[in-house]
Image 1 (cartoon, rainbow, N blue to C red):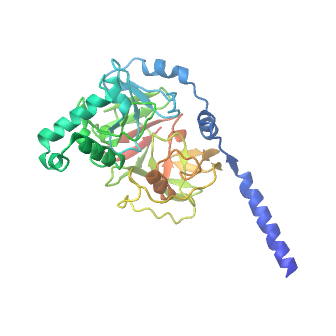
Image 2 (image 1 turned 45 degrees about the horizontal axis):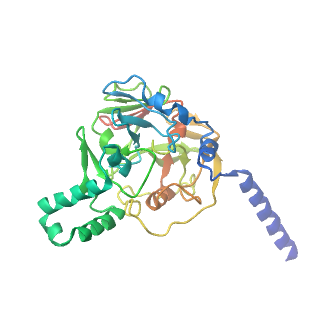
Image 3 (image 1 turned 30 degrees about the horizontal axis):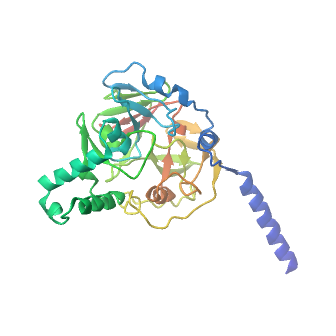
Length: 340
């Protein structure tokens, strides 16, 4: 009996050593952590110059060096007011933040006053249920915190609808999500020259059929260790976020059920150690990747919201670390993702 227990202990000890060898601790320092997991260096001093390069209506330069948004494409949407927007295929809708309002020379007081005025004039039922302005404002702020009634403060710029998000304070002013990209037949992200090209010619590369979920997510199949896996293509993620138990052949993801993945999700989420792991033999189309660093959405100190953490427990997230040396295209006509 003692020999059996000793043998079990040795096996367990060896197993622990093997696992530790495959993982590395992640720094809590944001720039250091980004460089760890992407294996690249970034320089925020280059951001403004990169966004100011030659542009046309359909060809827009982006930077991957934006302050506190490293490794993600950010454009200067409005060169006069210096409105900066992240282009994020992981977002379905377009959102604007308080910094956007301030850059339009509108104070917080003026903003909320205008919203109240609009409600009093155009939404009698909502207006009558909150007799005083103070009560109405408190109600609105409470609902916005839960991502309800955000469409009441919809902003339309150049025909693009943006919803209001007062909960986040990112370094950029707004997000352009799938609703923006889907206005065009094809959208190319040239990560070699750092340009977004709208209504581009069809890219000559490997085409992978994509699935568009009812929630407008773009998903593709890829291979990990020869096994098929499903993943989101997410330009708003700088790295690889694998699902839990990737490669077990038992991925269970329902594309029609995203009830636990919404921005307002407040339920319990597991917390996993703040480590990254190394992944080899990942194949996207004809491109094979080795020595890719990845970390779960649920690591301690994760930047994902609760809904996103739950989302990527079951669904892989392919971020920009796979595309830094490539040109990719979303072809909404033929419903294919192309990588070159």
